[in-house]
Length: 415
Image 1 (cartoon, rainbow, N blue to C red):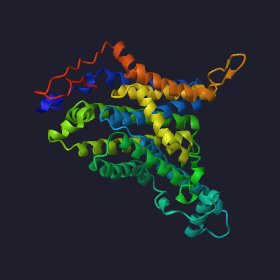
Image 2 (spheres, helix red, strand yellow):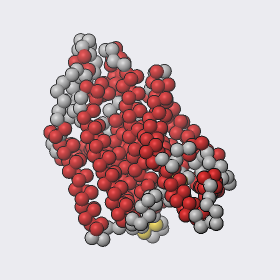
Image 3 (tube, one colour):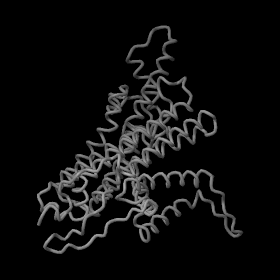
């Protein structure tokens, strides 16, 4: 049996500048950000709409990460949105601490005697944690006042958790539906822990007021929203370039080999666990970055954001967009996110049937579930398949090469 039989032999990496999807994605993101910026400056689009687009780009980044895990490696993770939420909590801690510290310091400065550091710290604790009946600052907040450290935590903590989980799961050869259940169970456990008041993260109240950036109180939200839109677009563009470069080379070929026939890849001498752990950990860090950009635009993060249902939504977005296609994941997340905002935000008019009124705020989840079922049954390539048809891209025919050349089917088209 040869390496070539699995199509993971070394081959020339296709330049990113020659990739149609990369060019289209970069041009699309650049056009979107520039046009929205100009329209916002002319007052033709609202701040809430700009924030909606910025949040949508962050969700696209999370979908891109899941596609690397599920679409290219075959690991159906039902917990990747938990890493998204952890990134939001990490940056939210700094936003709440720094803003509260400034308010407390300004208030105590009016006292006859200058406040001591202990008094300032106690007042901060009361302001932040008084809602859960305490003024004691948990150990989790030891470095909440440091922006560089909290930004690092937003990426490193998801990576650390994913690394530990992946090392335990992959070395035990847990795969398939069992691994999916484990990721969902871990997400549920984390969510239930965060709901507790003694978790140190304000329980069900979560972290709020995140749209108020410390040190930028004089800057209007119309300007801050544009900054975050650009930051989200740049993060998505760089991540798409990195993901495209990764999956177009040897590493990506091994990932697809693991997805199609893990046993054969292992037989050829590849450390399957190392590849799985690398992509699982890397995408968790990518989700943490997306969450750190998302929640300052959303304004609040709470345990409900980490509940298993959120990760299931992420899977639905990738499936509707077309897994195994990086652009499919981005398209799916963007379409579903914007459609959700339109249907649940009152944009879609109610339909009067005489005997019953269809209110889309109540029926949106049913429509989303139905779309997922229909795509799974009749259009497994998702919306990305429409892009393939439009650009006249056709997947290469996969033929059984027989037992003498290996049982994997044919050479697969580069994503």
